Image (cartoon, rainbow, N blue to C red; front, side, top):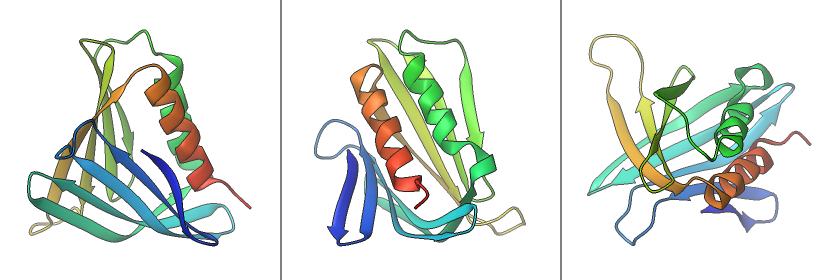
Length: 143
């Protein structure tokens, strides 16, 4: 889990639960313009692989703030928290044993025939979510 620099200037953000066969989500091919970041995303779980070539997140979308909030609330919360973007939706629920269940839904669009794929990664609520939030902020950071 975390930000990995593949080649100079090109980084990936990978979220993977525990275990070799756990679900994973990868954000990569990052580019910036003004107040937005564009990246590709790939989700893999149990033999299913889905991807989107471009997801655009603006500074006003609050993606980093959403994950920072999950990290701050390491003692848990009731219900489901949701962050929504046109093509990416992240849901977070607090589960037993101090774990956060992150549902990553990739969707090709909103019209008939559009596809969607959801994978769930399980992250430790304390240090795990704190590290994930910091790594995501680093991936999305403005230069």
